[in-house]
Image 1 (tube, one colour):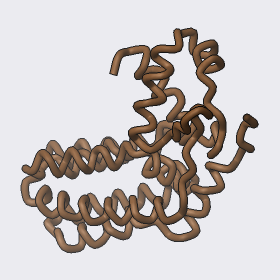
Image 2 (cartoon, helix red, strand yellow; image 1 turned 45 degrees about the horizontal axis):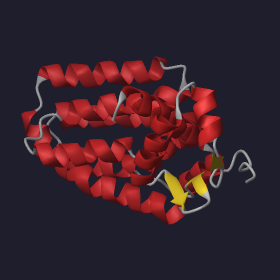
Image 3 (cartoon, one colour; image 1 turned 60 degrees about the horizontal axis):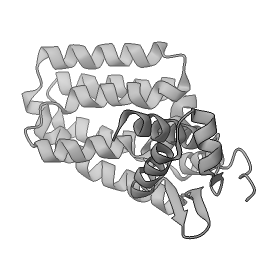
Length: 216
């Protein structure tokens, strides 16, 4: 994606994840081009890219709107993550090095110090990437990375950022299992760590509807 298109797409997706743009909000090309200081071409391409990611809905003759996410979509995304990431961790754990453990420890410390909740999903991925890098299956790793980058995952991660201390405690416990070679315990904890409760999913949905959709 070209630089301007990426900039516009990233800004729109960030606002959707943060709840600034609510489901159903109209995304008017004129207004977006004016707000971002670009022409209509990068805006149109950014919206097309976001449509392919399922973040935006483009309705013929009516324009683009922020997509609506359901509780089922959140649950299915997390179920898929549990399946794939458990497989990745089981493959990765025997190959992790001291350097990987140190990187994971630094990521935990960085998460604890991160004051910006909007950046927490990225910090969270830094930890998971460190404990997954021993996996030799590059295709599987790429799928997992894409799932972490999926807006549904990022919204859920933001929803639990109010409980960052508890989540980071699980990170520390997970790392302790890996250091001690307790792979089965680590995989079991990972599944619990990723899986979100109905209450967390409901909180994620409340983030999305925190502001009323724009008219039009």
